[in-house]
Image 1 (cartoon, rainbow, N blue to C red):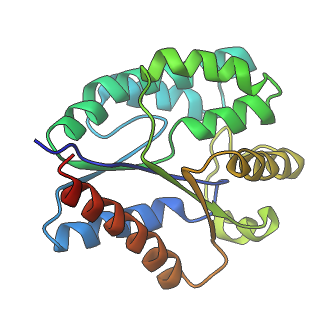
Image 2 (image 1 turned 120 degrees about the horizontal axis):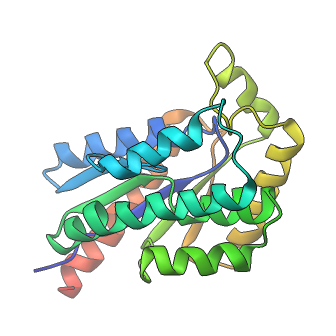
Length: 213
């Protein structure tokens, strides 16, 4: 049985990855391509991961940086074992709104815990699972402000402008040294962003089908 492909969409809060990832799943389903959508922290139908998500998102929780990194990894470990791997093995493609790159950047760089430390934690949590391709939706952090204005913000979304500047730079820095990360200009019209990503996903799916993997 051919394995599914694992796709992750990344970027700072307000970059549009949630909307784009759901659009991609809808389009792939129309094409009769087996696919599921999920998210992090948490995971669709992953009760334990979702409970950890609620802890991480709650503004009333004063979580230290180290505990935050470990909670993200714990949620991810459950997500990988209970949802992502089983679906990939069945030949179902998985599109995730965030994955491990967010931890490298938000906790490793944003929280200054060090990318190497965060990688060590998550290598154990993910058991070597990596996305086949990561789409980094890049946008000026100032331009995300109007997208999130009026919305009730969670604990991480309440971080400072300086924090998000650091996070954006961190994403772009890591993308330079990783060929699986494709940077997408998220300031393009929505339709262009979606089509550009869709084309790349379809290419990978077709290549895998032709290769018999």
